[in-house]
Length: 267
Length: 311
Image 1 (tube, rainbow over the protein chains, first blue to last red):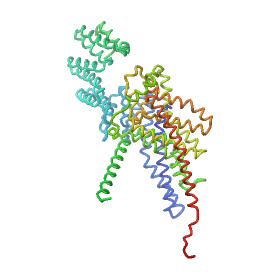
Image 2 (image 1 turned 45 degrees about the vertical axis):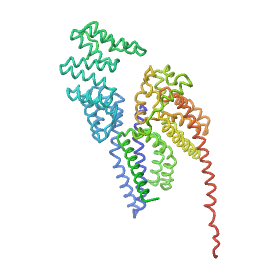
Image 3 (image 1 turned 30 degrees about the horizontal axis):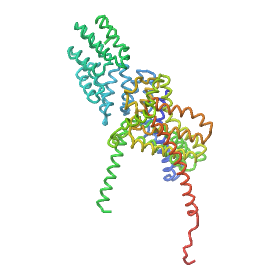
Image 4 (image 1 turned 135 degrees about the horizontal axis):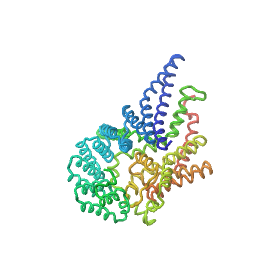
């Protein structure tokens, strides 16, 4: 079992132990003080103990479901993880910003856009939604899942909200705005968005690939070569090797020289 | 004192309490995972108290009222208090108090000492295996203190008390340091200094879980170093063999604070100083308590003085 799961188990078990300790002491004190006979003593003790354990039952059930969800995620068991996450939410559990981001990362990796969308909506609707980066994460995931679910206007709005909450995500927001524009048939706006994403994050290969693909499709081979050249020129600093070796940059360069008929990275 | 002074003072105290409690509740309510590190530290106390409660509740042989339950909780209270006050540093209200970070000054001291902060130099050793080993070593702060606490509690209650008092004192000194020298560490303050990204199988999940429960400004002094130094010192006092077994782990724990880019070297030095001061103070405070108890005990035990009244 991973240290992460052990930590989770300890983190959920200790409150239960402490609460049960309090219930046991309370039950014994009450039984000894108020019961008039030995039988009454036993009944009162059992009643208070049962009531105390019953009060903790929802927390215990949520803890088990939470542990099952994390266990399934760590094992890569997609279906089981998605079921447990949903069960945890149905039991009234709140994953919070950090765990929510981890779960959404898993759901997005597994391309379960519907589940990721529902989780993001639920977390954003919490009475005390997370602020700052966590909120931007939620909006970003919501926007990406909306895009893949076909809700193009919703995706654009969510991505703008993500970029507004955390400017570091502006390049991702611009990229998906480009994808949204492309779906809407506005190639010019798409190229502008990809270029904007690239200027914000020159290492972001997907934007480079998309812009090169669109420029080549429009017959603007020189412009495409120019964009690749700019990225490579920008990579001549100390950290440039990573950019030059990036598969997407290699891929864009190759696509640029071979033409759009032989893309090496599916959009 | 005038009535308006009392009214104003009472209202201010109430307001501060309500704001403090509400912020704390919001912090804990929002994210249930925030409890997990606190639970790690208090786990031994929870288990011992639970066992004592079972004995008392079910009237098992050897049960002696519920005093043992309270006794366990009281004995381990310094651990819980230390963790609790650390958790308070996560409240966003601190941003108004800790307005300017001192990372630039801390980096300057490291550069004056070594030419560069060791976190930057150590990136030459970075690799997935090394990063995972260091991540494990860094997480030992949640394991070593409770384990040593259990060992001492079983046989040497007096040494256990001194150990927990030293931990409590290091918490007080360390958290005072957080107030006076707020900083976020080289990883967050100067990411541009690092050309190599840390990667590993356990690095990402473990550090993200730790950072989710970490106070935003907990750099100077390094309480990772301080607490583990205290653990090593008390392990030495319990048995040389135990100290020998723990020494490599503690050493790795110290190096991991630099390798994982959480601390400057000056934080590590401050951590050692905090440990030394805490251990020295703990011994002296317990001795002082003994003297006070000895002075008061005979007086309390003595028969009432002759009032000089009629027989």
